[in-house]
Image (cartoon, rainbow, N blue to C red):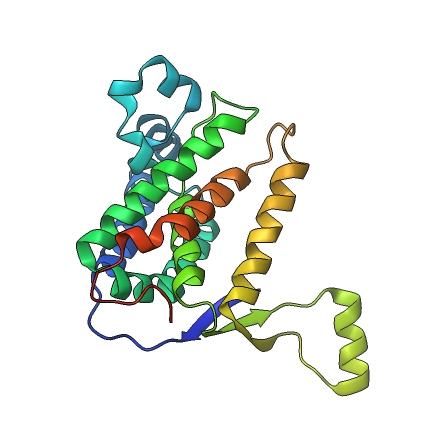
Length: 234
């Protein structure tokens, strides 16, 4: 299910989310534009988080706990993350405030990266992508706005879709509206199940435990970053 929008009005302008969207796009486009795949790999080695290297040189490589979140391996990787940040990030920024949201996002990226580093079977492979930080945003969203409605595009499996098409004339895509706790709870459950099943899989390509760690961080600690004038729940 791909989120499209949420029914959650803002109380003021947000700009950190837009800066993060631009920074992530630039972090992918610039290395790719300079040398395509070779440039992306060099950027991943230099700015991605490599668990084994971080253990060996923690002080020098500490910035990669944040910089890895501004790199992506493909257009699909980038766009998928940007959609989630765009749909859910604005309301979290609205609740936390601009600078608090930025600090929360970067700390979420660091916690997610450390969660990945603790369990990865490939400590020599760089971690890149904003999904861990965005997972922290998702955890914060469900903590602050559990009952807000989220619209998501559902792409059914082929056989069920054929049955629906024959019986009811339903098209290949349809829109569901769900409460945030339901949609994001399902999303989090998928991350845990995929993470458990891939604990000893080499070459899986998705840092599931970064998602789990980021989401847990956001769920648990987002209220500590909230502006004092705003209620913790809505």
